Image (tube, rainbow, N blue to C red; front, side, top):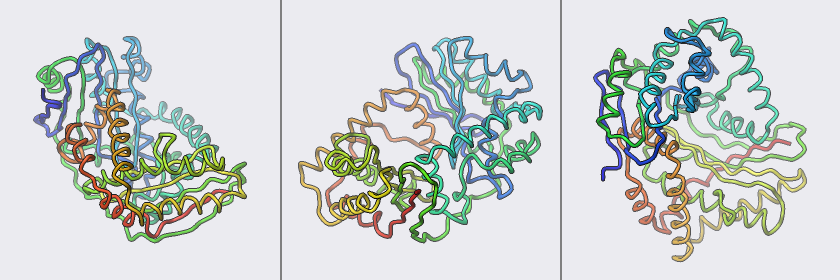
Length: 405
């Protein structure tokens, strides 16, 4: 059985569908435009645009957009990252066409009425305030701001209140006209109907959108300069990130790094850092490692919170684990266990059909194709201890450090 079927609409929008059993269908428009596509005078605009999509279209008032699928028991939502904006819907199988029509309506026919936008700004102001009160979230963005200082990736997604106050419907229309072009959009779907049915519905509601091509290239990030920064936040605990730039989405080594990061500080209780720093010594409630690849770079980060007087001790233990991974190859048994755990986590995550659908859309957008899960599993099984060691050396040299105290 073919895992995914891909097709392209006449306007250049690429599409991907997977037929699976079950009463629920998911679909999404994945747009290759995010925070890094903002001009210096537009910081926070990609996220504001995501909110604005729900404020009314040529056919619907804001309340009609919000109620269209909810009245059917479905959901409509969206999110913004540094490189893309995604609008997605979940409905019963029989309401799939209604969901696609609504996605098309909000993505391509929104009117961005200023009176609605002014009210929505208050919502985002509150979101910014909530974010500032969460140091465990704020530190990640501050770390990336420093890591990519001077580049398009070096500012956070939410933006600032003073900038948001200037934006209106015309600002958003100029931004979407420049960035939301048909050659930078993917439609992704999953449900218990054929790819032919999915394509027929997509052609009806998305295929008539006028074709447009992006007229600019993203600016490459500058040179990486390691840093060690402490920022006073007067928090109850200290928060710390240790990390560096890493492989981008086109680099074959990214899967090896993903396995390494999962072994080091993944979600399982037996990750190396969790065992060493939490379980054996009780120095932290939460320690984790993350890897985020972008189109031309990436970020690897180890985060923990602890008592202020334990920061240096925790950092010593983190560095010890990193040194061990760099200098001593994993045993055959330990490597096999790490691979098996990682593959199982991916398989379990794949049971979430919505997440699987979104990942497929992102893959088609970035790589213009998608590996089957079995192909991914085979690549993981082929990783050697020497390759892990080499990636550890390459990634964890010249680390940067950021601490909130």
